[in-house]
Image (cartoon, rainbow, N blue to C red; front, side, top):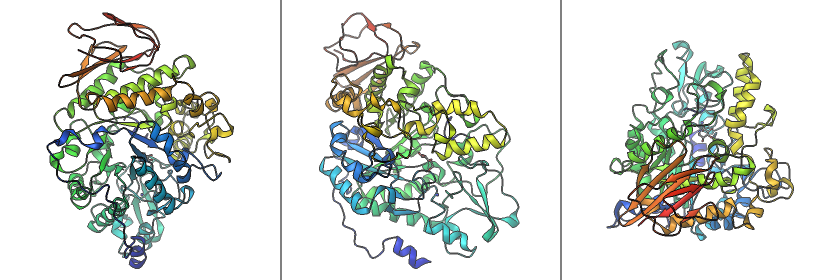
Length: 597
Ligand code: NOJ
């Protein structure tokens, strides 16, 4: 199964929990008074542009080849200059790094590779001084098997921590099959001889699933969340949060199951009860952003997470967009996505916009650390079209309703590295799928070929700062190879070029800040059947804008629909000139944002 293609001694724990320590409460994120007359429509996280930083690959300060918090601190002025206002950091906690930090061994410590808690405090201060908010990753479906809870849990069936995880005693027989995303054998049950029982791990064997049925576990999580909020962080991105509730009888999964993991693996009977409890116990006490990684969330379920009246979460991000052009049930992503259908793309984003038309709030993203680079996947990364298509995708992200989640490096138009050899990959997913396929006698060269487009490490290669050795990322040996195109594609070069992808991104964030219609305006799709051009209007009271995006590497004319009258110079245009006309002559990957009268 490919991860989300289509588609983790009482005294010791008290110490770990930081009991007895006095927390300095940060005032910035304390719950504001109930919404004022401004109401639902003016909330900071709705107006935010979230910039995602993969800390491991951002900037190394000490030459060990791994990005770190001090490195990130040295780049805060750069991030501020982008015009973004929220930074989401992938996990920075204590971890043995089986899955690059998504396997947490200490929720209240900083990963050694990344620095110290003093570094984190300095980072938080540096961000807040610049008016940047910080969102951390909350990984609580699973911990690391090296977490003290799991060590205790596996030590004896009578351990007070036994029920922090899902155990299946061998005398009940072999548990019903559950597929693991990262296991070499694809088996989500691992047998543990010490206590003669199986434990559940949806991800790797080193990522045992936490048992949310246990109220003590839930309180531990809420206390940990408060620890970070009391430090002053501004929100959490919640990793695979729909997975926290499961049918713990683990019934057999029907033979007809077709990769519909959402129904059988996630969205368990108590999910919304837990989210409401989390809101009551934690989120409601702070003025913070909460966003679910909506793994397995369908269009029909979405509002259950984010309808404000339900008091659960602010936002979620869905996977329907990422599935466009993928072959369903494509085990191991053996087949790379080919050219995708713009009609399908438009349909997905239009349907998701509609869900939040009256209540709730959406998100939009085209890449992250689990996906290929957006320019390679959704644009055209050949030299002639790379910059234009990157800018077009940026335009799309910053002109849709819903909060944009923009992946660090995309503002340079970074592209997939396309490794030729399996040994170049560091990602547990790619490496273990390869081993599984090898054991099955599958077509390994086809797999390596497909990974060039789909593999997660494509989105994780180090940030390309400049044209010096190792792209200015590290003075040591980078943990993952750097894309050789850094000589041309890098931040220093793009700083100097007013027409660069980087400077276009800055103009795009400025446009969204300046024109609230781009944030709150109603969205209406135009020319739905056009297979080349994605066009829509955004309307907020008297303000109206037209967005026209030529999603192809060819020129296309696009006739202005009757009744629409252009109202001045483009707010955004990724080409140097624009001639108003009844039929707009669009250049390859041209993107226009035009005010309407
Ligand atoms: C989702 C994260 O985005 C991904 O990187 C990770 O491997 C899994 N969840 C498991 O935590």
